Amino acid sequence: MVEMAEATTEQVVVAIVTEAIGGGGNWGGSGGQWCVMGSSTAYQVAKRGQRTLLLEQFDFLHQRGSSHGESRTIRTTYPEDYYTGMVIESSKLWEQAQSEVGYEVYFKTSQLDMGCSDNKSLRAVIATCCQNSVPHRILNHQQVHQEFSGKIQLPENWVGLVTEDGGVIKPTKAVSMFQILALKYGAVLRDNMEVIDVKKDDLRGGVFVCTRNGEKFWGKKCVVTVGAWMKKLVKTVTGLVLPIQPLEIYVCYWKIKEGHEGEFTMGGGFPTFASYGQPYIYGTPSFEFPGLIKIPVHGGHPCDPDKRTWSHDPTVIDSLKQWIKERFGEVVDSTMPAITQSCMYSMTPDEDFVIDFLGGQFGKDVVVAGGFSGHGFKMAPVVGRILADLVLSGEAKGVELKHFRLARFDGNPKGNVKDFEEQVNFSANS
Ligand SMILES: Cc1cc2nc3c(=O)[nH]c(=O)nc-3n(C[C@H](O)[C@H](O)[C@H](O)COP(=O)(O)OP(=O)(O)OC[C@H]3O[C@@H](n4cnc5c(N)ncnc54)[C@H](O)[C@@H]3O)c2cc1C
Image (cartoon, rainbow, N blue to C red; front, top):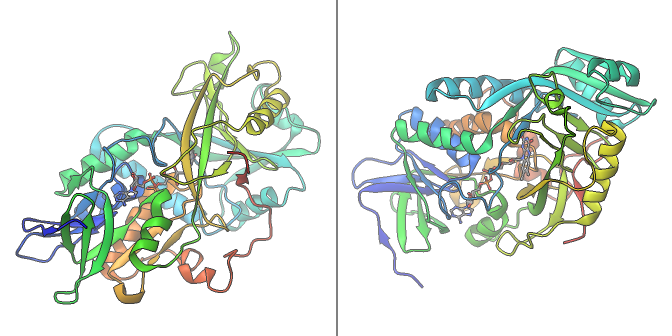
């Protein structure tokens, strides 16, 4: 048992924290640093003039969580209509943050969603575009061929959905951006601070956050955004078992054949894309590694975030090879990926986020945000805004959070009911 000395000059929290009360130097905050959600929230909270502390268990910009790498897609095309407005708000907040920092992390292009015309998820995406007045075009296989200058081949019974609000976000640079901005607004950021407990302060109110190296921080409020470690940490703190399953994921980059490299770039009119069906495959234009294109499967195998295998699943690679051969013909080399990178998803059973007060003895003092299920990066700015609202005022304006509440799992392990196929592919191989 580590003897803990309470911090007297600062305040802290677990994934993020906020609003220290005066005197004695306490903090609010905790959580992941490399963590995009924690960093975005720290920026939002600090910008509102609150004393903010952000804690990370590893080094800043480590590669053992979910937010590292070279690219993340952004798109408004979702089968669930409650994400569209969040993505639209996020796009504006991405632009605002990058104009504050003075460099770009968000690069726009079009988005192509494709799949069999009777695919329920794709049909739901089209319905959502209509409901939310997202400008879109539905193309048959020949029109897709024409639109993208013969580079993308679809079967006759497939359709393409084109929207103009796709794009690529650079994750490492974006997390760093939020941290720089949080620092600019006075937040304190500390790495190599593993949070091992969060306790209610019965005397003053607020919470203590305890770290493995024996430090103890007090904060009026606390936000916990610890990614793939959510289930472990929340279980330690409350005994509650959140239905958030870490998955080990592999990102694959494939070589574009010589002479065709420019055709797959954003400048060459190439979109970000998603292919509905089993497996769900997505990709970004050639960007971070010239001559290579990123095409992974949206899925992976269950893992313990502290005991990863770091191994490939050959069946996933095989399905990608087949898909690339059929969609991009002879122009992209489908023999083997040129680069693979490992990452983690935090999956909920319904692929919806968890954003809620922890409740119980903590009431509204601790907010948890996790289970971003492989599609949360694009929404980091709006999630940060929502979390800042929740800890500072107890409610988030302009957004319906019922789909993200913990109570959806009460007596209902699958969570939100959906009338379309699951998108993330779970593989048993490890
Ligand atoms: C390969 C891959 C591709 C993806 N593609 C897309 C995409 O195209 N578009 C999209 O929108 N989303 C995408 N996502 C999803 C998106 O990246 C994640 O939803 C998002 O990064 C999750 O961020 P997070 O802050 O919740 O988790 P993390 O970034 O993992 O942050 C959690 C942090 O908490 C820290 N931590 C954990 N426990 C503790 C503790 N006890 N004390 C202190 N710190 C702790 C961790 O070290 C970590 O830094 C992708 C994810 C992956 C892995």
